[in-house]
Amino acid sequence: MSSNPWSLVGVALIVAATFAVGWWGSRSARATTDFTAARREVREEHNAAAISGEYLSAASFLGIAGLVLKDGVDALWYPIGFAAGYLALMLFVAAPMRRSGAYTLPDFAEARLDSLRLRSLCTVLVVLIGWLYLVPQLQGAGMTLAAIVGFPHWAGIFVVAVIVLLVVVSGVLRAVTLVQAFQYWVKLFAITVPAFALFTVFLGGAQRQALDAPVPPVFPRDTAVHVDTDVRLTVREPVWLADQDGSVYLPPGEHAMPAGSELRFPAGSAVPVVADAEPDNATWLRPQHDGAAGLLETYSVLVATLLGTMGLPHVLARFYTNPSGTAARRTTLYVVAMLGAFYLFPTVFGLLSRLYSPQLLVTGETDAAVLLLPGEMLGNWFGGLLAAITAAGAFAAFLSTSSGLVVSLAGVLSSREVLRGRVVDVRVLAALACLVPTLLALTADSHDIARSVGLAFAMAASTFCPVLVLGIWWRGLTAAGAASGMVVGGSLVLIAAVGAYFAGHRETWWSTLVNQPALVTVPIAFAVAVLVSRATAARVPTGVGRVMLRLHAPDRLGFLDGKLVAGPAEPPKSGGRHQR
Image: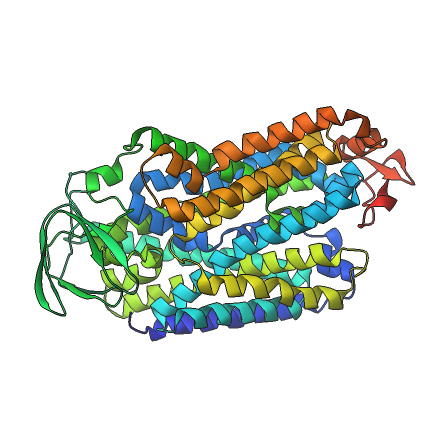
């Protein structure tokens, strides 16, 4: 892919603006509470923009369009689940979590279940989920710089990791809040303006294909494709192409293409697609065409995204910056509206890429559709300008999500009593929290960012969702039950991830479940937590009544010196046993 100076300018501008906003906001930070809770003074709409900014990750900005390009309408369940997850969070978690006074998930587990061991287990799981979420962000950054600037993949990963660390350690959470809110509006602008412009060009142009016909997509012009990794291509209609050895005839079937292949397709020829993509347009437009396996995958994706949102560590931490439980619910409602507005537009990029960038179906690098589509459709200075806007939005996605995750992970680690929550410790731990996912991103498969993020959602749904829902709404939960549910659910997800590496993407029910395990792992985690809690009912914490009252008391009531009084709730000090 050739270098695009316009896109490089867009990336440079968004990085400079991020540092400027962070520096301006960090001037008012003086204490550790400024770093961890932004003084609990963030207004609902500002907090909603910040939550949306860090939640709209590489999976949202790049991955959804790539999945739509490959899988068609079935991929639309991902944005539906990503946005609707906040409805479940608003109904069951947001307000009680804010009233609990717990800034992190380990804080909540210790306060609710009176167990330091459970707190340690939660800390390990928070770090694991954060790393699973960070890896695809860094991979997306590497792919972005490779697509728009020509950098090696590893260079992009290190560049974004360094920038994220500089943003985090040079500011505080109040500064990061401003950065995340700013970057939400950058991402919304960067996805809507090019989408409107490109769709207008499409409506006024001559490029047309029968997307509802049982034929493969075709190349709109003579196209040269460089294959960077080994791929298996599905050929639906026979095609002649040119490679390094001359003309090649590909009959219908599957064909292996080694890395380094140079393929040239004439205009109008059928597009061979990677083996896990939809080979013809009619199938691409028809939902649930693959029967029971497709239905299982859909339900599993919805379970993971609907219930996994509440278990993401960088999401729940944001609600503690609200002044009350009512404000937390109002913030969540704003988030749903903001996410819904954003998710309308990646679909447009996926649709247009099927027509104008079909070469991505040959290489499998469909996550680059948003970045490359403007240049493919227009091929002039205006296309370069739109590409710069989308590149800036992509980098805003990486920076906002990654910085929120790093701050959350550093906050969880620094909340241990041995570190005493000092700011210097948070900054050192931020560097450590970013090191491991950076190394993992260099070796992991970088295809299908949205599906990679789905693993983090499945892990969160199978571990923290049962603890939060049962801990908030059922007084019978015990520390043993919570720990058992998290260990079993998390272990099953990890086993499924290993199985998915060997199973691939076959259209069988067992392959579907190992690739999308939440439909099985979440109910098992809930069942284990309930059954073990029943078996250890004698170990229910003695102060559970007072804790439950704190979680569900109206905001006009609060606690003062351990007694229920009229007035706003007094946020307890973070750290554990002294709260009870």
